[in-house]
Length: 94
Image (tube, rainbow, N blue to C red):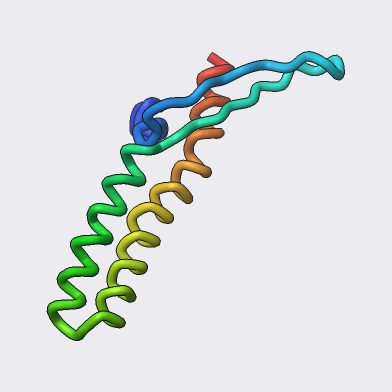
């Protein structure tokens, strides 16, 4: 609420926006990608795998890696799914 609008887009490293006026109403579409964010989360999951494997074995390492990836990437994407459309709507209204 009190942060700049561009912070909602921080997770994404490329994408594009386009408009469509085929049915009489102007619609804004977007397609955003976050390759660098996903690679960072995979690296962190790899670290969690090795720490979990060193602590309790392969199964624990896989569980730590899955939890780390879902937590880092999943939560960031969930927040982005909420924040990005709101930021775009606010930018279009201004």
